[in-house]
Image (cartoon, rainbow, N blue to C red; front, side):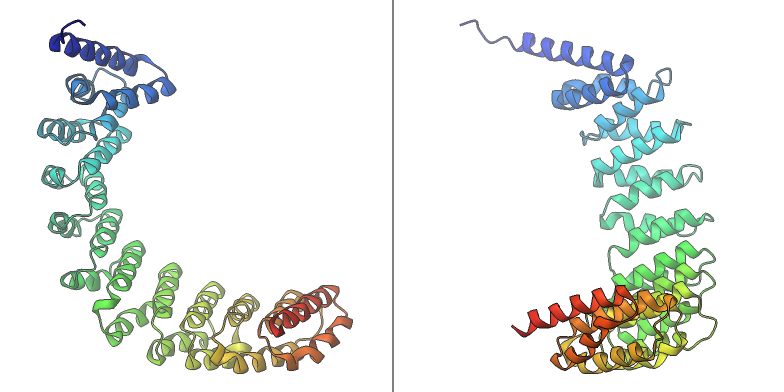
Length: 370
């Protein structure tokens, strides 16, 4: 057997790496993808060539992009330094994002290097995105610093990342952001409050969220409704029910509010929804009926009475067809055998769709009775 030659093995590895990097420089996208995987398998022998490639401004951005991806496998000081230098000097945003992803992959040891980039406004958005993906307490001071940026995407990204820590000491940052001029940041603040709900009192949450139900941005208002729906108390239901009583509440917000009250699954919420029926637009009524199909057993009698009443009051005309069909299905899901006679009468309804849904509801009743 030939003696082990360490230098020969090393030379072979270097030769493989050089050939792979050469193909990484010159191949098409598919070739480069395959070569980047092979280079990562070669380990530290690939480092010198990859470092040279990622910093070579004469190479096209795609080759450097793949080199940056491969370097994310190496948690080494020289790698972090090269990536940060490339991050700070490249004018290509795609390459910068690839470098940020590599630094994210390296993790905690790259935090300080990324933090230094926050001082440069042009680099701050990508640096914050990278820091946001490294879930480590050391990022918190840097992300809080980024909350002072004038650009709302930077503030929103930083706040979402901060909220993931569910740290009560960050509550002042979240509370201030509820009044941010950018809707995206206010939405991030709502998500932050929701993430901290285990550490905050229900009155605190309601006081913070209720005003946002009337936010100028409808999506923010919808998020506030969603958050209040996660608080199953009469106090949390009150602002949602008040919103349903407001004549100018937009249709989409009505739907979110109905769904939020349905999630609470309390007597207060259910009674309020039943009382609001006459004020609801057709889509919100449909959402209410669909929600009642999953009502808690303790509330089924109240839900059944409301569903039967609404069905009787709705004229059998084309515009009510979809809503009447869902009412029939919901009644079948209540599991109340006393509804059989009423459902059988609907087998002769002028709407063929209602007839079919009545048949399905009757079969469901029979299944539940077994």
